[in-house]
Structures are given as C-alpha cells and as structure tokens.
Image (tube, rainbow, N blue to C red; front, side):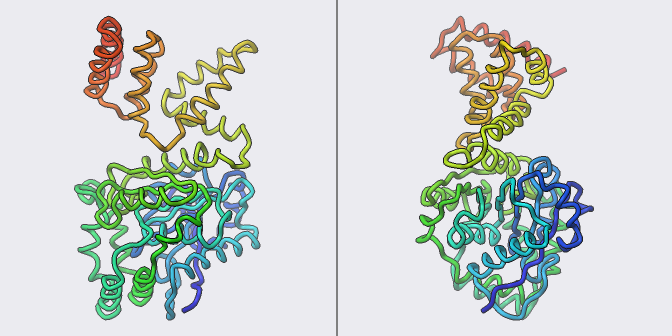
Length: 416
C-alpha cells in the first residue's frame, strides 16, 4: 500500500468555471485569500465538481472552496496500488501542504474540511491523525464504520472484473432521496456519469480501503470541533451513525438534512451550506477558539439578514445612533451570532420558540416581525397556527387572540 497523490480543484461560484488542477487556478485562489478555506471531499463513485458543484454558489460568499478527487474519479489520476483510509487522509494533508508551499492556498483566515461518504470517513481520519489541522470538520452522509468488510471486498471484486457501470442502478437507488432524480435530472445524471466513467481498478481500491476502515474506538481522539451531518433518507449511513460519532468526539454536534439521502451537498445545497456556515463561522468554532469577537458579529449579521430580511436589518442599522449602536451590536453578536447560529435546533424550531416568547411577553411589534421571519425560515401557516393555539392554553386566550390578528395580517401580506 502507498499514499495516493491527490489532485485539487478550485471550485468557483459557477460550476462551468471550475478549473482542473489547482495549479492553473493560483491567481483566483490568491484573489480569494481573505476568505476561510474549505477543503471538500467526494464520495465513492463521484467527482468532486459534480458532487459539490450545486452547493458552490451558496458556499462562495463565505469560503474559498478547494476540492480533491479520489484516484481514478473526476480529475483524479488512476492508481495501480492499494491504500487505506489513513493513507488517503495523509494524501489530503500532503496536498494541502503542497498548495500552501506553492502559494495556491492561504489558510490564514481558517482552514475547514467537509467530505461526503468516503470523503467524510477521510474527515474522521484527518481529525484522528492530524489534530489541529482544521478549525472544524464536517463528515457528511458517512460513519465511523461503513458496511462490512465482506460486502466491500465483494464489490471490489465485481467492479474489477465488470467495471463501474455495474454500480449505476444500485447507486441511483442509494444516493438520492425519493423523487430527486425526476426533479433534478441534470444533477443526478452528472453524478451517475462520473460513476460510470470512474476507473474500475481505482474504484476497487477505494472499496477495499473502506473494507479495512473502522475508527469507532478512535473517535474520542478527535479534538477539532466537528459536526456530523446525515441525510434523513440515507439507508447507507443513517442519522444514527452521525449521532453516534458526535457523541464520542470531544466537541461534537450532529444534524440532519431532511430532504437528502446519501449525497446531501448535491441534493439540498442550501440546507447543507447553512449547516456548514452556521457551525464553522458561528457557534461551532466559538468555544475555545481564537476567532475574534468581530467574527461572531459577522456570522450573526449573516444569520440576522437570512432570518429577518436585509430590508429590515438595513432599516434597523441605518436608524441607529450613538445611543443605540451598542445595543444593535450586542443583539447581532449574541442573539444572532451566538444563539441563532447554534446547530442544535433547526431554524423552524427556533422560530416556534420565539413566537411563543413574543406572545407570552406581549411583544406585539416583535411578534409581527417574527411571523415574517418564521415564514422565511420555512414554517408553514399551519405550523404557525398550531403555535398560536398552543399559546392560547399556556399563555392566555386574550394573548392568542392578538397573535391571531397579527398572524392573519402577515399571512395576507405573504399571500399577496
């Protein structure tokens, strides 16, 4: 076995503009050096551009995104020798060092990692083998042990003989949530084409690496902040696998992308990006990190705009003066940058809690604002109604009466 030589790809906001080798993208990387760097890894059978391309438009405002390809996949060079997941992780570290030495990667603003399936397994191994290399790690749709050695070795034997097209029909069932292929034919076709075009020998080597992969007993060594993200419909690595890992690393969280199966960044780019941004640039790195307070403020401002709308935030900040400036800074940093950025609850749940608090306190102007925010966060009118009915019992019928009037007004505006 030997450490594979990996190929990097700078992923740009337009998927068609994604360059090949990182060496040809040095000027672009240098131009984006002020941003944190996010290293993203692929799943077995996919190329990193096809897998992460749908999410780049959402990630680009926050990170310089650099992907790496598995040997024989995407832009990856085929190999003739086997390797382990531990050696694959060492290959990722060597690639980062190479890019840094050549001036193509600037990690001064922070270096983060997110990988899917085998790319996520590599993330766990990176945390074990190279503590402190990343400010945060996000294994996605993966586990500390995936499947059984027997199944992986059988797959490797089959693909070595018959080629990767034998995997297409089964992967189409495992990779995507129900209905995704019909609704997203371009994304799903691109991913399945990368599988079909993958080098059969290299694919087999990755399968054998997964046969020997099991870091369940080593998870406690991971000290980097880590969020394990699962797809709700993932039969390969279900949410329980993410919860298992998050409970055993030193600074772990878990989250679920409700609409995804095994390829979350391609299936639901917006939800996946939100989890990554909230965790890496918000609460996920706040505890015990060396980020400046201004970073918490900036993360809070991003979330505040997403929840309340830029028009409202601009109005609030533009009307601020010397008397109210510190109050505006406080709520942005602590309410939005510390609480609303936490990955522990989905935003719909946070909105439901906030609506109840506004009703209980009789903060009617704030309630109207947060009904708008709840709709923006994805709550349905039916869910808002249920919150108001619950509040009628626990807060008071008169308070709920006012809440229903305000809610009716906002929903009518929303319908128009």
